[in-house]
Image (cartoon, rainbow, N blue to C red):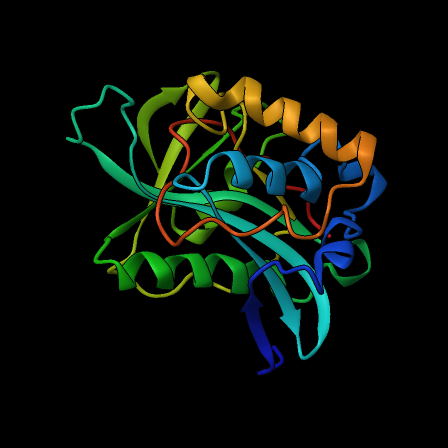
Length: 220
């Protein structure tokens, strides 16, 4: 894998390129478009950590993590988790290890904050990505989040093997809290209708994330 990979914040200068990033047509049902993720990050600033994935100066993907949130959603703060929310690898850039870099980057951010596990969820059906996640070292927790299986990767173990992942969407349930889901959808619709000002989409601060959802993965 190239050594020039890095993450970058979404800014006014790169916003148009960010929302123009597309997965393959056959993967579009598996992951929300970047513009929706940015709308959700805008209305859920404490629940999203969006970043662009660059190889040198070339945009190759987008990720969004959730960090340090009350996973139970009951306000007790007894079950704080962090994990991967969205992952979009550009159609022409798939199969090159960028997905692995994204997962490792989220894991590094969680470790930096003192976390020891990375949570995600997936559809348990035959077309779901369970085999992929198990191959990375994720283990099912026995929980369900909506109709999705919950899995966790213990971050004390070795880094995940080099397996490509190209489209991930943690959104079977509410991407944000239930109180702001309607607002997120409205913001997305506004973005589609009126070509949002480049000053509006912005990354959330490096804390926060969704309570629940499901991931989907399509190999490049």
